[in-house]
Length: 283
Image (cartoon, rainbow, N blue to C red; front, side):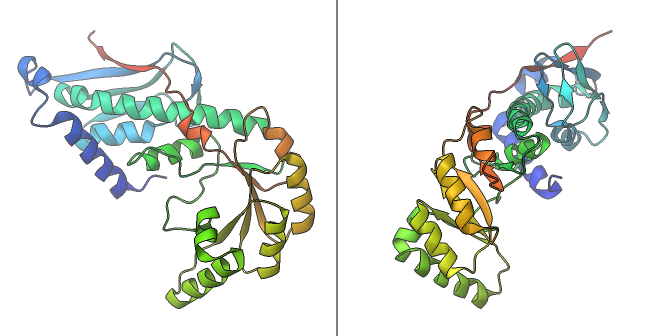
């Protein structure tokens, strides 16, 4: 699912940051012709993510790498299991090791937490969305981990969807002005982007319904009872999204309202990396 060019650009930049003018630990004691094998060992239970990224990192360093997966992205994993075996130049294995682990540990943590939210929503119409509360230059992999965990990717950035949030609305002179200016802007530039508008209360919802010409209404920091009242007003005219401090404990209370989406920044920024290790196979 990852864009190959974007992934390669990320790998190039990340390895340049780590290797600099050389992996001197490896250069000092391992001959450049040495070949080896290593095993990715799982040390915590969760949802595995980052297999595609790991393979791409090793193959970026050595096109002749042999990557043998034992699991795939999205699989449940248990401590003591193996995710993959990799065979390549030892220099490749050692230079790629930390980047592979950093990516997979972080991605697996996000996929695992996302999966917990998704499981809570089983039986409900509502789906969980990620947000732009991501790590700079790591967003692509964090959002991929959300997808692997069963969540839905919201916009990737500022470029692929219009979201008129509170500051846009206040600076533009109100909801009606912001929407009208946006519709004209998109028409003038022939940009087929969806428009979402943040609302802060039921009066805002009524104003959005009056102006129309949008795709989704965000109900920000509403209580479940307020969401239910808003859903009655909206009556299926537009997609709906609940946002603002919603946790695993309150998730189902919001889902019971029938809201289409719940956006949760915490599935990324509160996720804890899972423990994985790459170990040399020496016999």
